[in-house]
Amino acid sequence: MKLGIYAGTFDPITYGHIDILKRALKIFDRVLVLVAKHPEKKSLFTAEERLEMVKEVIKDIENAEADKYCGLLVDYLRDKNATAVIRGMRVVSDFEYEFQMALMNRHLYPDIDIIFFFPSKEYTYLSSSIIKEVFLLGGDVSKFVPPYVIKKLEGKYRK
Ligand code: COA
Image (cartoon, rainbow, N blue to C red; front, side, top):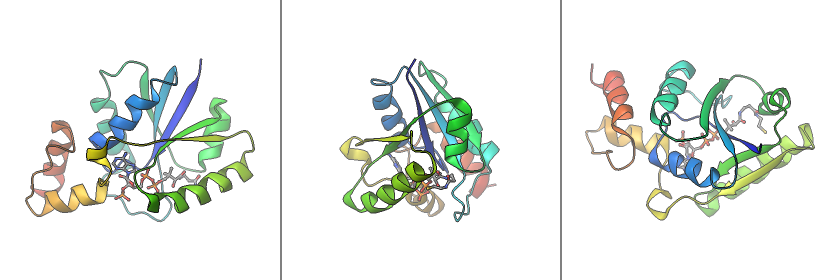
């Protein structure tokens, strides 16, 4: 069974992430969406909330599962006996950061491989931050995030 770990912050998960997940499932038997912590990022949703959202929006996607982890990604991989990490590559400016992270992860865990997928073009300019900003200022984000995520954003910003 080929297991891929799709790691990210998912604050919140968007259709862009779901697009990458579905692409990865064409190659991997199982994909685990791992809500991980970026050490320098302050998130709007707690890790528990992010995981709960991910679980809800992927529940009908076969062979997709989710978990959360706080610590080094490579330690999680070792623990699961996994070696493949999935990441999305949106634009050229993603490359440098991804390259640095990939090689550092490989230094820490030589067995690792990072597999990149390009999202559909309508999602290449998406990020969780831009969704939050547009939503906060009253813009329509329904083309970019599932209705469940909109409900959760309302809970945070429009109580
Ligand atoms: N669609 C929409 N948005 C996308 C996307 C897609 N297909 N692909 C990436 N993005 C956005 C994300 O929403 C996020 O937006 P934001 O910055 O506004 O929140 C941004 O691109 C970055 O994406 P993300 O995949 O969440 O990466 P990250 O840099 O926040 O986190 C981790 C990367 C969590 C995998 C990394 O920090 C990690 O491995 N942490 C664990 C600790 C560790 O091992 N550190 C050492 C690493 S060498």
